[in-house]
Length: 285
Image (cartoon, rainbow, N blue to C red; front, side):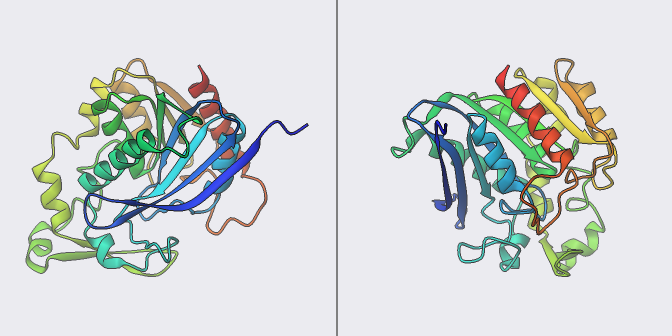
């Protein structure tokens, strides 16, 4: 017997704080009962519709969560084309501060939605961030009292040493831009010098170690031991900075837990299934 109706609402447009819209998806079982909210943040060169993220969202919804995933306003996607990176100008103007503002906008949106007010529990808001998004959710969870739990999924531990922040600073400042190749799309992805300037201006806030050391909420770190994009040492670092954190190592899993884009299977890869099972258990405690 089916006891619920799965509701999937794709590509809701939110007004961002920095002149670009935020596209948002929600997945939930429509039954009139308030559900814990889970907000998922994609990573660098990522987007909400990447790979198996839809299947992951459905799995959370089936387990009784109100699951939200969204595109950061300056991730390079558009309302018309939310997949991949048609707006490289926006991508080049992205930075960590804008992503934190975007996440705050999504949390704000949860509280004012009349359409879902009977379906959400605003006292139970958890964040999951993949890769760069892992750093974003750690910072936001530490500074925002509305967040109750946080999960770093193959997450980074240090923004300062990332390639988007470091490099030949003299040449970057002189030219105003540097490029990173997207191996899948073959695009040259721009980073304008404002990225570095914004980081330096907000370095204390953007130090993940500071946020994790001060985090007073349940914190889970999930990482694959075959991750070559964000090495597992970063998970060990996060765990060492917060004695109350939980560390889960997924054996033989890569940075995207054996998913890829596009993902054309009807089920998640086994490593991602393991991730979802662990997340559900942690968030249900």
